[in-house]
Length: 207
Image 1 (tube, helix red, strand yellow):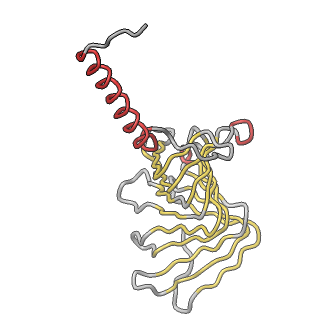
Image 2: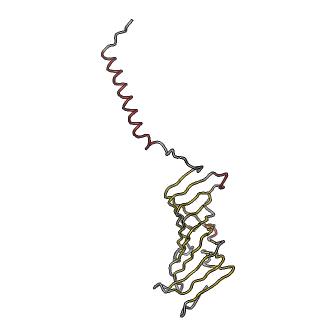
Image 3: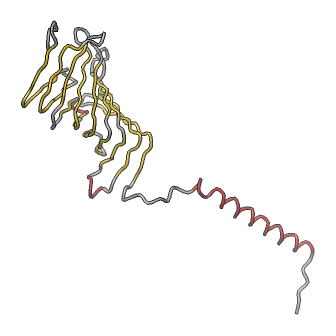
């Protein structure tokens, strides 16, 4: 037995099918933009692009700013709540706004989830611009630990310090097995074997 379909019902069915087709096409074309990336994550839980973070010291003052082209949070069981950093850049701020900050860059790094410990590795370059009687200070090393809440940094590997005048004339440079920086107290400490080279006519290293 055949049931007759009225023209009105037929038009309704065609309209419903048409809307369904349009909706499917829209979803198909926009699925890549709406849905999150589905590439293999290699075990990381979260990825942040062009990430920036700020950290305050124990007195509540801004201590440093950290930027990274990419920050990846790996499995917590393996890393203990850490983010891996790609091409990190940091600015160490003195409690006195008149004092120039230390600026740092490195190839890689890690930062704890709380932001209280930062490890920089690979071709690290740190510098502070001239201030009062001090020339421009520069530090190069391959590994550097930062503790922002304490306003301190240290190396466990050899590092080189140097100072230049405003016109770029070298004053001195110094090699040491370990270097510690307390940027809150404006103190640089070298330990282990230290070798200094002072340029003729320079007043040498000063506190």
